[in-house]
Length: 128
Image (tube, rainbow, N blue to C red; front, side, top):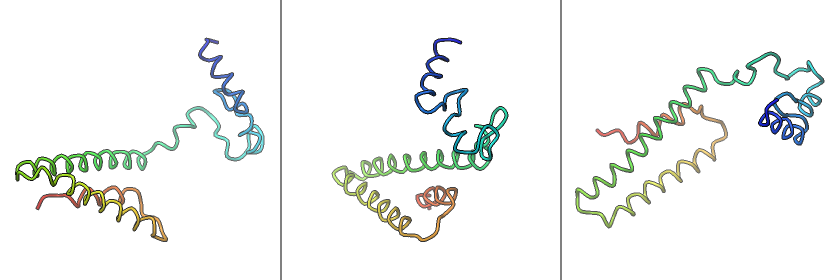
């Protein structure tokens, strides 16, 4: 066992045996060694990473690029119109729109799928 593995084992022991080879508290709570809910076999930690997760990650990355590009376009447009003192006002209004959208989303009684939640903001700033 290398020193890094030993450190991982010691850290796992401090957290109830949940280290690389442990399982201690989590395994006991789930009903023993082969209890329901305990991932068996190798690679059990990767089961959550499938196509739905990949789609959400790619959509989030695309949304980030579009919204960052929108901020840059606002600044560039305001500079082109010689309205640099109003850049802060325009970005504040942009932020206020995000705040209102976040509050509206938080007030909803039901959930919206993450894919659609990330897709709609990408469609709003599309130039016409």
